[in-house]
Length: 241
Image 1 (cartoon, one colour):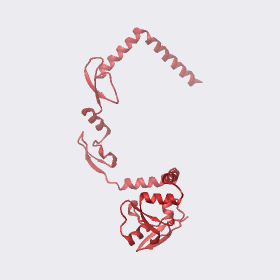
Image 2 (tube, one colour; image 1 turned 180 degrees about the vertical axis):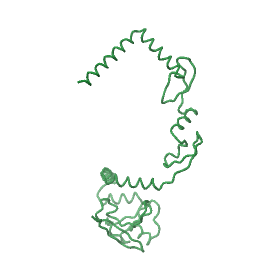
Image 3 (cartoon, one colour; image 1 turned 90 degrees about the vertical axis):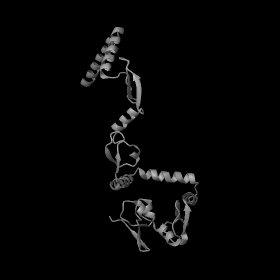
């Protein structure tokens, strides 16, 4: 089924509206048809009419339809307002306070975000952004390896991998703690997220043997073995049943 389209020409540019569209902007407003993934390159008819008659729109200002009809794009029906004033005007038209109107909009947006159509639209937008995003070339602050980053959020992290981030933090003391080995009493460093009692595997093995010896001397070791065997028998019986 073909989409219903309404077209208006203004100043040599075609503006289209889709009356049966589910999205409110496409349904209520005429926009210039530019086949580009970047939305900022698209312009609205009512904004272009205002610019044609009154010049550039100041930054942070919006064009309001005074009669509330977005299809009436006559210059006498258009008004340039700040964002707050524009929001307040729409709230007054519905007999709401600005706070109530914000909640009203938020409910509509949340309801639309849960629909399958919203997921498709967002997925398409995200793919377009990643497709046209240019990677930034960086040099790792730890291993000096040249690498590329696509995400703008991660540009603050000057390391090429999580491994380099941990190592750098370990050596500069950000993620490291100094402790004394319980076996050989030697001082060593360990990660904050992975606390250790021993400085090496050899000391770890000795510490384990000492711990087992103490359990045997106190008589708790036999009790632990008895509990383990009982648990194993119980699990086997449950599997068989």
